[in-house]
Length: 245
Length: 256
Image (cartoon, rainbow over all chains, first blue to last red; front, side, top):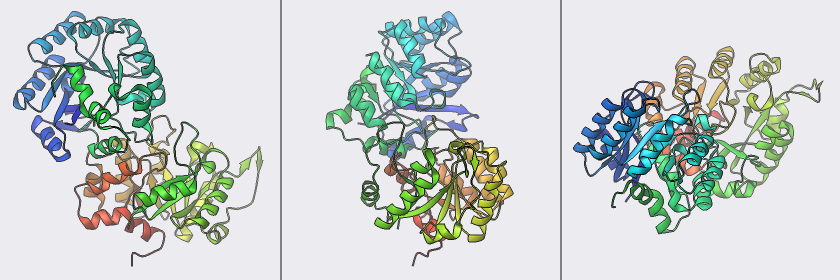
């Protein structure tokens, strides 16, 4: 079973995306992906309530294919954000949280700590578009939360530094790396897995922002045992989300 | 026939890479059924451009897989201007077939150094392709050119047979498409194009005759670069052109 741990749904003019669940499932079918872990772009960048509700509707349309990450567009909404996470978990059945960090509005701040604590309490992994330094700060405050560094450093704010991502992940046993990114550096995925173990690295494509084929191919190029591949290509994210394969 | 428009020899200074020797890279090309690859050396990029070119020249003598491109940089070294001109006839005699420039690694500005104009005029006269990479590979830690500078230098030298390389972001691709629509001499290499349906969308605006497969190997997974073309929703003719025929034409060879 292949599970894509990093998928976007909904609308963003900035990212030139307008994609519903039907479109994503068609892409998944065409590339042999069984399940999609989705975050709604409206929830991530504009209105968490509206976007998470839209994602819930898509989860109901495709219950066997779409798993939901609740999203927050900011750490700064206090109790409203914490209540939204609970609602997404308990009412919508979402299994994780997605949040985005930028240099101008970094989530490595005290306002993020209660969010980490709620996710730890609810057993929800957090997929966060963050830098290694931000992950280091956050994991030092709430080490029990299960945290996935989106793109494993392979994004502009992290300067593409997947080597540093590995070093920081090695410090924190609950920090995982998601390999979805534009980077296809030779040895990138293999080094992540060899240094951290196959149970700490998560496959993703970042569809429909990125072409999924290179993401699949860079996974295929890695020399792995069947068990390691099964962890990386889906087992890990399902385990973190508490979903049976 | 598969030809790679953007491969390298040499060493990679930032993290360990398994295959860096010419024979290893030639074997890796063969393993992916890539018959030939336009190469320059990272020694040219990171140490001394002329030394790297000698390395490439030597490797090409021993491996028919390599199509050598000469990497040119500034002649002002150790604070002394070396007035010798760029010897294109000599480069041709040594087997070079095109030019690559890396201003972001060689501390010069494309628009304000007269030697750049001289190189580009010579390349245009010879009909040599000039590879201009926005970035050396798709890693956000690598320095990149300002796309508007790329646009300005192409506009200043529209007769040059340009190969724009290392393009990734949406606005970078828009710049490349704009230039391709404006100038028939502008080509685009694919090694850093990672967006969803990027090949199909670019073809929709510019056709397939000026798109060139590039891998960025051995620093990038060449198989991941190839699959973008082989699994793109495009015709067989377009696929064959992008994978090899377009580059073959650019370096003055035919497919027959």
